[in-house]
Length: 97
Image 1 (spheres, rainbow, N blue to C red):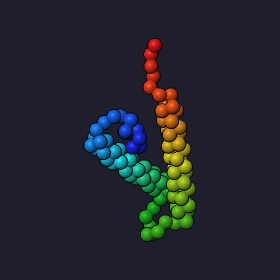
Image 2 (image 1 turned 135 degrees about the horizontal axis):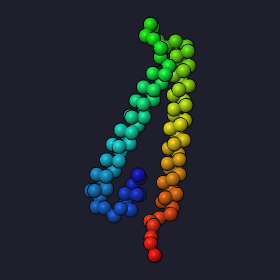
Image 3 (image 1 turned 120 degrees about the horizontal axis):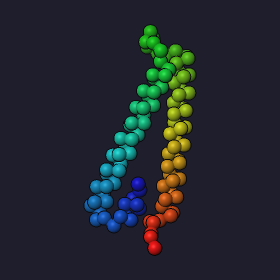
Image 4 (image 1 turned 120 degrees about the vertical axis):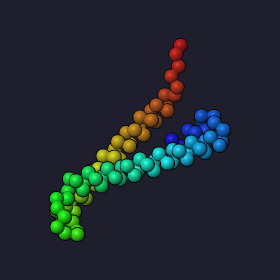
């Protein structure tokens, strides 16, 4: 949600600022969740043992590939949600006759 959407709600400026802060906090939380999910999934899928401090070449390749796939998927899903939100915004509020 951007500032223009908050302005469209016709809320007092103080409430708009409060809503903006809440939205920013939710976006940060979601970013951290995505990062943690990425790290956990790729670690679980790629790291087999703890015999060394560093990743083996195979583990490193696996982690990079896993992260790349995860981020490409995340970006595609985000773009699709943005498309759907734009379509909904362009249609405007539903009215009944």
